[in-house]
Length: 484
Ligand code: ZN
Image (cartoon, rainbow, N blue to C red; front, side, top):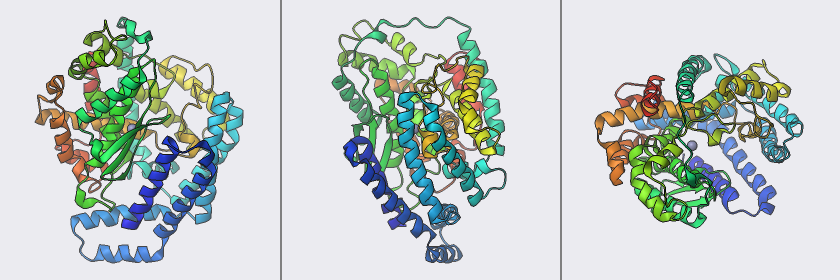
């Protein structure tokens, strides 16, 4: 188990370096190094001796923790042994080629350039699903990599009911006058001051910078090398300080989860989140439920004014709150607000499901994308770069990943209701800069548990009974945006 853990974390470190420090000329050698390590891990995972050991372990009356370790490793092994090494190698090569062609094609706004490799990748995904196997439909086999046990049969009706509610909420917001745009929106915000401010917020909310660090990358992400070494990235945009602030808070939410696993689980398959969805619940909760609350903005308004004395000279907390909670349909997922964000995800889910089912071909994807945006958000992308080519996910074969983002919001809402039941004054405390009670609650009820239980069971235990449901998120949005 420790060797698997070491291999995964060395891969994480090399990938982190690739995004933060590596000179561009290092790309080819780095791709080869990563591929060698991934193949090594795959081969070891498929080693028949490991299968025998896992069987022996399961027969030997394991403790609850040992049983969970065996179950988690078996889940990974089960998926791996069904894929021939040669298939894994070919698919990985196509995915790495896909990501680099996507970068060029997006810059050139040329879907034709991207189409052949995307067709190849979708072909691999269909083949991968068949090799892994499924009870319901092919998409389930892909979904299971990110949200173990989740199925289309469960997800589709859930997301359909969420869509109805989100469209109602969006309609109500669009039916009333929007808050005026504050004058600071068009000003310049010193990048060095943004950087200092993000570090201060990380410290304030409880990310341990003694056991982690923050760097700059084009697309913010977080990764963990060990429980005592968690890396975050952010980006600095001169014209918009909130991009850096909320990227840092979001990634810190992921990072604090990684820093909070029970130290006894280090080096085992328990020192990880049970799913990408529940991981995302932690980042979303800090970003939106905490960071986009009124008391949070009240606390940080004087601090932001000090950081940007020129740009925010005439700004008050009300204006900043209006700006960071503005709801408006936009073309780009990563720039969207917390109401329309999930609609962006539902669009991607619908399209990738159709691709996997063979109901939609890659060649039809740009039109299908644009039509769905027009139907759902009332805006039509003027180009494929601002449409179907905006996300990296499909280019490197992460089909089945998108629902994790919405599952994260759903889990976050359920957990937040439970947290507020236990700590009714938590939100008011943000106005005094008090975040420790929230972190302590999450540590005790979520982080510490690692992957002892499934994602939904973890949420159920933490919340005292509520699992995956739409109601909590709808109540949260209705209250915040006064749309009930
Ligand atoms: Zn995230």
